[in-house]
Length: 67
Image (cartoon, rainbow, N blue to C red; front, side, top):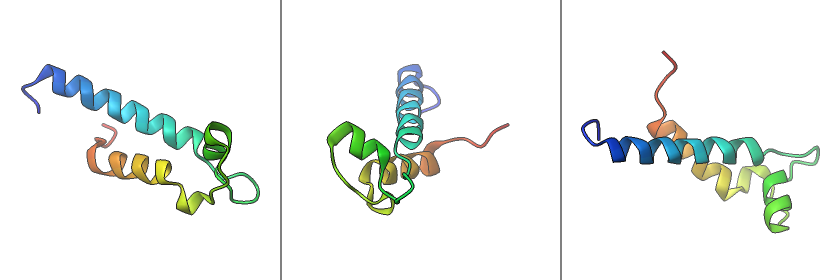
């Protein structure tokens, strides 16, 4: 992927989307995901939030450590 500028750009966009999901899908004081509640009207406990699980997995797999 290092030799493909389009691939790098795509990965940057995916990591930015994952960061936004992590920022929005946080627990409220009852442990319910705020992002799921606001965006889809779903009451999901944060530990079962599929969006946040996806974002954390993407960041764990592809984010580079801070240099």
